[in-house]
Length: 321
Image 1 (cartoon, one colour):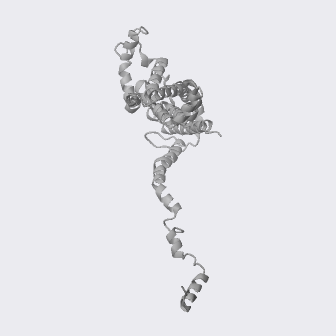
Image 2 (tube, rainbow, N blue to C red):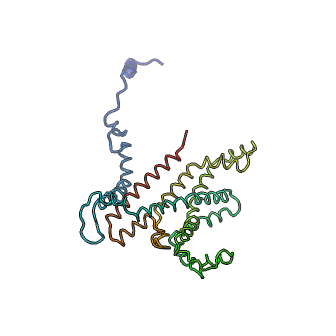
Image 3 (cartoon, rainbow, N blue to C red):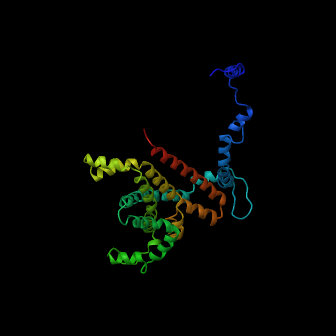
């Protein structure tokens, strides 16, 4: 269809006129330099979390470092002493014994917690009948908590009347009058057994979640190739559980380094100081000897050591190419 003269000129003008760039108003509406910019929005979203960490973590930590540089008593005045509290730690035999005992306790419980948790996870990972009930039973001690379990063990470890002695007497192992909690090695063994039983459920939960993420096709292919159950566990399950295993170990080690509740309830660090952990020693220094400055210095050292150990575990258990 032929166009009139005015229509042709309008069409020619439209074709020759270049596209106008977006105006400043359009650019601002699109997000450039406006309050809806992604970086501004992200900062606004994380601001509450940053404020929470600053108020409840960074500020108390900075104040703790300041206290560690003073002779702060629980009651009374104080003055600045510099690094004296840190220098005294090296010569504090009680603190060094507590560190050694904590390391021994950590070495005793860490691997059994992982092994028992792994066995539990293997038992309940399949959706067989009764698996849900077993998961609940295995995880129940962790839900109850170490505080409640420790108070129960105080009663059950009594000589002559506790269930521990009655059971061992029925099995012919002891005469039923063993005083578990007033003997350092026996108390340590009993506490380790309690912790392994109570905490393995958490390890089971972490490992089961990892096992359920492994594709079933991998196991079926290995089974077709003639792999035995042990082969599948060693070469498929364990390598693919690297991250859950690493997390379980880190949680176990940090929890062992910070162990306090079970020792405070069961032994009070005794007999003598045979079952005194680092945190128990810090508690006694602060609230029994009323030396808050020295106790805070020990706490700062403990925080640094736990951080370094955790970083070392992350590095050793990192994903390799």
